[in-house]
Amino acid sequence: MEQRAQLTTAAPAAAPPRFQLQPGGVYRRKDLATQSRAVDRDLQLALNAGELHRAAQGLYYAPIKTLFGDAPPNDQAMVGKFLEDRHFLLLNPSFYNSLHLGTTQLYNQTLVYNHKRHGQFKLGGRTYDFRVKHRFPEELSMEFLWVDCLNNLDELAEDQDAIVRNARKSLDRFDSPALRQALAEYGSAATRRLTRDWFDA
Image 1 (cartoon, rainbow, N blue to C red):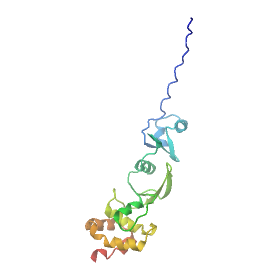
Image 2: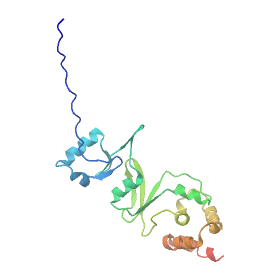
Image 3: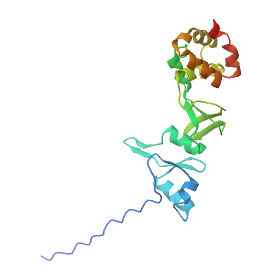
Image 4: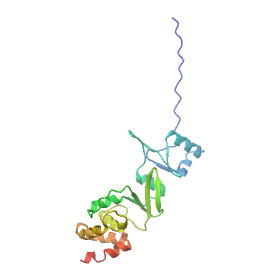
């Protein structure tokens, strides 16, 4: 019985990646332009292929592949590239709950203290509240959170008078020199007036 030759066709080779990307990396158009002679065309192809996602105008990220689908980069990477600056501080008002001053609310809000941008910006599907501050620490501390809670008292949903009473009663739970320093460096004028006589009582 004559055997017929089987015609086989090789699978087409996978297209090479258009850019050198790191999962979770965040890029501006100018970053990618150094890797392409036709960056806008290659950007669109990368977006269509799911290699990149658009975070905002001119801002893109390479998703992190998980069992549950594509995940965005962490807040530090996203905000840092948006600002093009490493000097910023991220916090959520829910952090104040750790002070045990009577705050219990959970807030779906990310504050970004920085030197450049002010306002709410949506990046990669998340909204960030950027606030220009002249001074803020490099890292969060309990003393800074105590001061910041009083700075933002008007924005909190809980009983503000109760928070103030509890804050005054809580002084012995903190490092007094560190609390005084945080108050001097980061306290608003209203917070400094409010606490003017607390440490002498």
